[in-house]
Image (cartoon, rainbow, N blue to C red; front, side, top):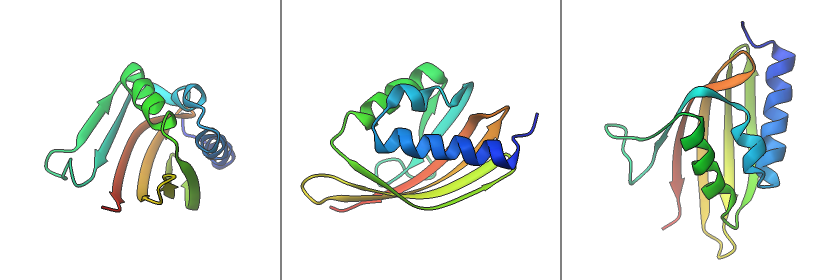
Length: 122
């Protein structure tokens, strides 16, 4: 079943709120049991991205991300049908910035696949 535009936007708004409050449990609940996240950055290039597969592994990843002392700011978002994309800027207390772009595919109101490209200050 396709995700309706309204359902996709509501889910995205909930995801944004969960990130901004570091609610890893709420975030993990948004992923399909068979979901996969691929992260591409300086340590995991496109040829060999970090692959986080399955709800349990994704939940552990989100606990790690939400456990960091970060401020999350969403600057752009686009939701259309079963797809969403967003730009997120994270700031550590020491001033280090992380910028990430993510594209997601949803199914039945859950995130099925996500690809994230990130860069951060050295």
